[in-house]
Length: 390
Image 1 (tube, helix red, strand yellow):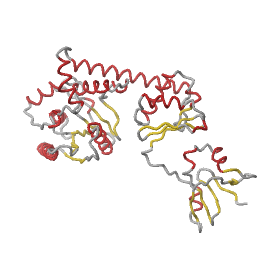
Image 2 (tube, helix red, strand yellow):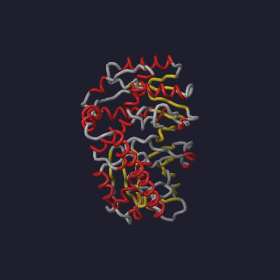
Image 3 (cartoon, helix red, strand yellow):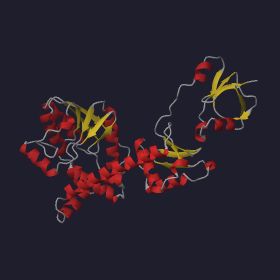
């Protein structure tokens, strides 16, 4: 799709959800989609409650959809603080939208070529790598559906012309003139100045982002090749460190970034990545750990464990619990220091620490293991087995 007269075939047969802010870009996208895909669209408006006019915008969007007989939903988003509000609003918005999307649904947003150029510059000024400089992908998974940007190759001037030619009405966000926001500063101050020197600047920057996107795909392919060739990831989705460290450092970093991307972890900074590389070579008894944001990487017995602390702990069904739970005086306790026990089938007692080591249970999980008692006698341990009381 290179112009607004062309029907976008990528949307054929899809249930289309439009993210409508009420600004010119999303209003044009609504008109475009409703023209080419009538009766195939529904609209979601995110009310961030950050402007005194936010409720007026929501009413405008609702009235517009009603006039077109399009299903409309408004969702309310609230923020605890105003630090880095642009990024926090974006994250919360897409988190909410991802939970609403169903299979075969495609969320369309009105990001265009100028937005792509701004995003590239923002990432460049942050010192981002290839992934950041690839800027916004035209299409990517979101929840159970797809996030799609049909206007990504369309210039802002084309959108303005389309709106005028079709006599569309839209709202102006008062915050768009606030140059305290970095994106607005680029849009209002930096890009106009650079455009006076460099012809077709936004198109050129968007093309650079496309090149980076293609390079990113090659980087992912290389990571997959290295992982499969050297058998670096096991069936439990953990990385074998003894095999990983045989590679050159830049390929190690590439594998780690690729794996973190697949796990939907936040990309670590250079400083954190350096700590992860150091973690690969520390002594095992140091209980090596690297933390950033809500994520952890730990190493145990030549394997890297990737932990998202925001996810609830999975409670797998325990056969020992099911067998013992209905006994009188049944209780659940947790590990105590210095415990010794004898597993069924064993002829001698062992320290609990030794038993847990032999069962390959990492140290940070041992304190969470449920120990099942009847009449104050230990009978079984979750993930370990039954205990002999003789």
